[in-house]
Structure formats: C-alpha cells, structure tokens
Image (cartoon, rainbow, N blue to C red; front, side, top):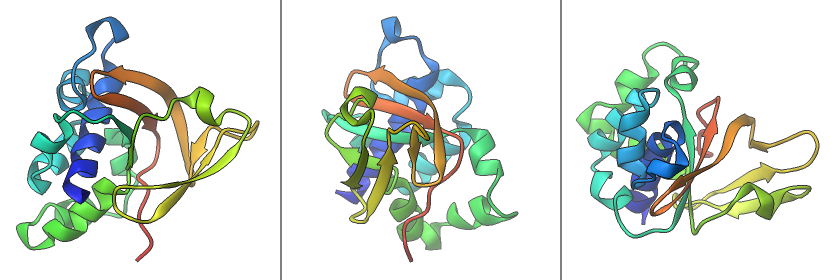
Length: 160
C-alpha cells in the first residue's frame, strides 16, 4: 500500500504540468511537466513507479522541485540513499490518498484524510485554503488517467 501511495504521489506531480487534454498516468504526466524532477527521482528510488502507473484512482499532493528545495540542505540526498528507502517510501506515500478527491469535494470544509502511508493529513478547503497540512495547494485538480494531482508548494512530512 505504501508503494502504491508513493507511486501515486509521483504520478500526481507529473500530471500537474500537463494539460488536461493530454491526460496520462500520474508518473508520465509528472515526467512531462518538467517541474517534478526531484519527485520523479524519489519515486524511482523508492521503487514506486509501477504502483503509480497502476489503476488507482489516487489523489496525489505533488511537491514541485522548488518545494523540495525548501527542505534543509542534504535532506533529499539523504532520503535517496538505498539504506533510507523505507523513510523515502513513508514520505512519498504520505502525499497520497487512496481514491480520487477533487477540490470541490473539500471546498468550504476542513477534512482529515488517511494517507497511503497510514497517518492522516488535514485538507483545508475553507477560505484560508486550499491547503494540505501547512502546504499551499497552488494548482488543484490536475487530471491524470488514474487519479488527480494537487500541486503543493511544500513537502509535507509524516509524523515521526
């Protein structure tokens, strides 16, 4: 399940940059977008590509390369090491919800949602949102054949 979530998260990042008319699975969409290079590399390192190319549906909160750049120096490099694969999978699957959740489903609400990682995130669709935890959703509802991607400006981390 964690692998599925990570794969979905990766796919979501890709989908955001592609126009809806050219919908593809989450991973292919992210690759084509050009702004999810770090996410795609992480999904590959975690072994989640096939999962995120799967049937779904998935909802992925996809951080951009700029979002990953906000992490403390060395964090991404440390997570990408083979000995830290379990931690990387946990971070990536924390960005994925099972099922397809569109912005309209949460608009005007505060919703606690279970992630594929197992912990929950708070999705804020109220006037102060849209947000997931402390990350702003900068582009909601990016369509992919196997789900939806919501582009976020900050990497969200599971409770440790």
